[in-house]
Image 1 (cartoon, rainbow, N blue to C red):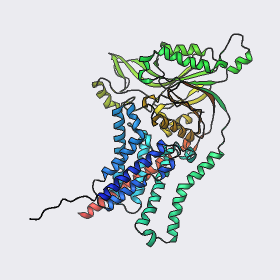
Image 2 (cartoon, one colour):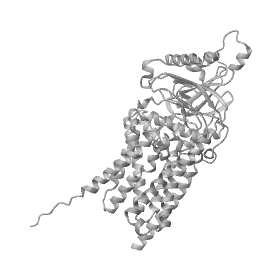
Image 3 (tube, rainbow, N blue to C red):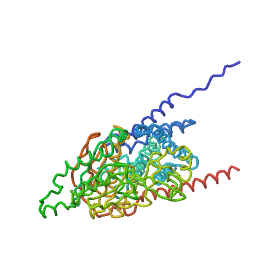
Length: 557
C-alpha cells in the first residue's frame, strides 16, 4: 500500500505574494504620511498588480486573501488614528473601506475571464474612480483615502487640480501605474523582444514618460506663474487649546469663554475703542476683521432664541468695543419645536409634543447683534450622523440614543464678515472637494475652516486633515483661514501653501491677512468632470461585461 504524500503549496510564490502585499501597503501609505512623497503613488499599485499576475499565472486560489490583506494594511497604516477617538469606529472604518476596495479588485479579476488585453485594467481604473465619486455622496462616506489625496503633501505637483479636482489625481495615479505595469509585462512575456517593433516600443515608452512627467511640468509652470490678487482681509485665528475629552469636567463654559476673550484682547489692542478716540481712528477701526474660534467651542446655542445663550450674550457685549470685528465660532446648537409628530427622523423626543434637533454649527456675530448661522451637513457617521435615519433612528431609540443625530442644512449658504461673503467649512466637510466648491458658487471670496482635531491625539490624523485644506485652496483658488482647537491652525494661500502654522497642543494666536478672490476655477464651474466621465465609461464596460457573460453562458448551453 503506497503512502499518500500531502500536497504542499510552493512556499516561494506565497512568500513573494506576501512581500508584494507589504510593499504595496508601504508605498501607498508613504504619500499620506511623509511630505513630498506623492510621486510614490504613481507606482504604488504596481506591486499589487504584480501579485495578481503571479497568482493568476500560478493558478493560485483564494487570491482575495492577498488583496484584501493589502488594502487592510494600507488603510490601517494611514488611518489607524481613528481608533484614538473610537476603537470600534476605527476598526470598522479600516475593515469596511478595505472590503469595498477588495470587492472592486475582485470584480476586476472576474472581468479578466471575459475581457482580454488592456480592457480589464481600464475597467479596474474607471471602476475605482467611479466608486470614489459615489463615495462622496453616499450616506455612509469615508473618502479619506481617495487616491488624489495622496498629493496633499506635494502641492507643487498638483496645481492643475483647479481644473480637475482631486479626482484628476486619482486618474493620474491609475494611468501611471497601468502604463508602467504594461511596460513591465511586455518585458516579462517576451513581447518587447519578439513582437513589438520600434514604433510600438517608442509609443509605450513615450506614453509612460508623458503621463508621468507632463503633470509635474505643467503644475510647476502654473505654480510659478500664479499671481495672488492683492485684496487683503485681516483675520485673527485663535487656538484656545482645550482638551475635548474633559472639556466640561476641567472647566466651565464661562472659563473657556474667558480664555478665548483674553486671547483676543491681547491680540487686538489696536482695535479696541477707548474714550476720546478721534473720528479718523474710529473710521480706521471699522475696516473688517474676522476672528475665528474653533468648532464646537460652546454648547449652549438655541437656534430659536440666541439670547438664551450666555456665551452668545458675552460675545455680543465684548464685540461692542471692537467696531468692524466679527467673530466666527463653532457651536453644538439645538432647535426646539412643539409638534405632535417628529419634525425629522433625527429629532429626539423630550416629552409628549416637544422635540429637539441638534446641529454642529458655525455662527458669526458682531457687536451690533447681527448674527448668521450655518449647520454642518457633511457629518461623521456614528458620531454625528445616523445613516439611513428612517430605519436606524428607530433602532437608535431602542438602544437608548447611542448614535449622533445631527441635522445639517439642505443646501450650502455663505456667511459674511461685514459685507464680504465667505464659506464656513466645518471640520470633516473640508475632505469633500466638490462640496466645497458650493461655497464659491454662492459667492464666497475666501474660506474659513473651523475644526477640533484633538480627538485623534498626536497622530498623523490632524496633519492629514490640515493638508486636505490645501487641496481645497488649489481647487477653488480661495485663501483659507484654518482654526483648530488644539492645532494645527494656519493661513493657507491660493496655491495651497501653509503659512504661520501653530504648534500642536499649545494655546496660540495668528494675526494675518487673506487675499480675497472673485474668480471661479474650471473645477468650481463644471465640477468633477473626471469622476463623471469615468463613471460613464465604467457603466458602459459593466454593460459590456454583462452582455459577454450572457452570450458565453448561452453558447455553453
